[in-house]
Length: 505
Image 1: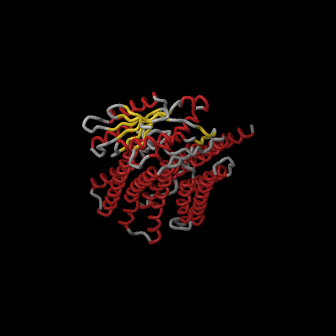
Image 2 (image 1 turned 90 degrees about the vertical axis):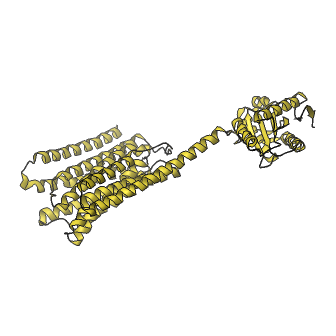
């Protein structure tokens, strides 16, 4: 009962904060109080926003049910908002108490600290495990989005500041530092989206990322208006900042409730087929912006920065496509390997055996190729006596002994069930018979399994290929005839098929 009350109180507090923000937005729309009081009302009403967001983040960070990485992430998010609130407090002091221009001032220290602290917080949250290819694609996609953001920042702020160059040195540096901070924040947002947060944090971080994206838009709007000397407290960027605070508080409360319900991080890997539309949207934004600026024939400096960004995006997209092509080739190779490999023993399966044999016949590399077919005698009795798990263990042990009985150039395969085959290259009939005898003796020795020692025998058939008339299928069929002849003559032996069957042991 008390847990439900705690949850409802958190949700009610977020709702109250939302109503508070709604009142501010209505004031912005209708300008109650007149223009003379606009700065005063805006500064005082927005002042608690960052502090409230910080308090919600710290409340969530203190939840004992959270993953330690998530707790560290929310702690850093809270510290970032606290730094921003201190900066807001100094801004209000300079603007309302001292009556001086707050930019540049000591408030800028707190504002600038917000960006790296928030980015570190976003990168601290637990994410799904990723393979090497997924990590490469993440960095390429993240760089693409940041570069597209750079083009927007260059067009709206840095380019005009560089062209005007009328501000003091400190003001110029700060005018450039803020949009660069936005790029750090943008990277943190992209990392949050593309790295797929764990189940316990996914919804909360999606809400937080949405709020921080509004924050970036508000920052860019503030920077663009400041370049034109048109910004005043209470203008539209303040509405987006307030919305960012509300969403941050809602995200923290969402995470807190997930932790209270016991929604934990799953540790699942990122699927190989996972993708995001975010980098493609960044490519679209960057190129559309370049076309619009080029069509307006703006100054070469502004256009030059966009061209550099567009070239960089093109290179990143090409690198990503190459990565995808390599990944697809690897996946196709893995699928092919799975299709021709027996999962229990790791040997080629029937299809793999036929593929390898056909290749040898086709290139003529084995003019006297021989096939040995091995069938375990009375294997069903092993399964009936000990169970299929022990039967599988025996099959894997048989595969190991067969590998040890042949050369590295010879191919051992499991055709299915308890039937194995060996493709020998460049062997005489006598050599093949000696290998068959060695295999027969090797399989007679007891196998040490989980249930103790298990003995079994095998019937072995040997056939030699006639290159002028045999193919892989015919060679295996002839070895099969020899193997059945061995079974008829008492099992635990081998037979060689030449023109007629003759016992070789």
